[in-house]
Image (cartoon, rainbow, N blue to C red; front, side, top):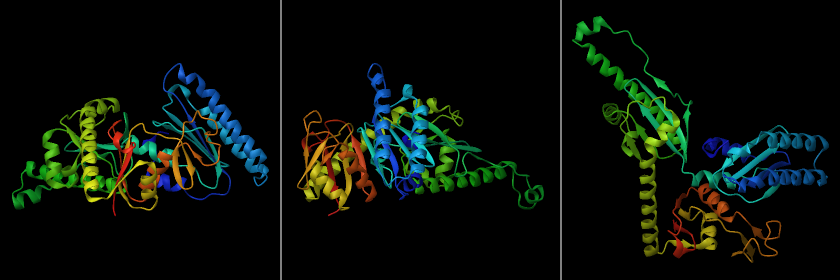
Length: 373
């Protein structure tokens, strides 16, 4: 699965406490040759490490050990290393396994616990900036979910929607003087109100930027009868994309998505400048982590490719070079995915998280926050 499949409902399920152990394996991967040649070996080594830890844990029953090993072996067989991104996460328990391909680098890690490790999934989804696309005509509407360059049709929540044919009431026309065109207009308005209501429910459950695709008359009618059209991130005036295909939809929207992200980054920087003036500003890993964990961060801004290994020393985060002796993730106090941990904590507390271009926060140690208080 890719990050656009990580719905709030699924994330809640992944975070539920389960009978010990459930296993999380995170593997850094590569998109291109020759770097990806090492991915298969690294994956096998980490799964072997997970199996060794299962074998050495006396609290794990024999049956659970066998079942989880079977799930891990099946996951390894299913992983397609020809189409990996920047990180791979395998989650396994005695009954199932999941494979996640992430557009964000993850550390090498094996975790046995009573909950899955989700911070890398959450941070990768936030960085990949998921969005919705509504393609609409007067009698049909399709909804698409996008994440980065990946676009797929959304076939739930009543979508795709098609206007049901109705038998025209001739007696009613004769009685009140309706014309066929008036009757048709009423049908279209009613249909678009239904589309607006269904889309509003989707956006309430999973807020994302919304892009609209359709001919100008259809979009104008949607605005007239509904509410969602008024706060869209962008529009494409093209009436031939109700059925995609997905790659064409993305190509048509690519420029608009890029412009939206540039404006969002500029808005974020302006907001941080204002926060400094109000003295509700935090910068650097230590300050932002503390604010996120305490629920004081209203907005957290992170440079897109910022990831830092740290050592926790007397409650403070000290950046370390992963190549230095004693800085391996297995060492006490070393945290290789501290940025992802901060992003997850911020989102959990209701903060907005925005990824900005590299060097945009160079003067603030690559990460900053606007505080609630």
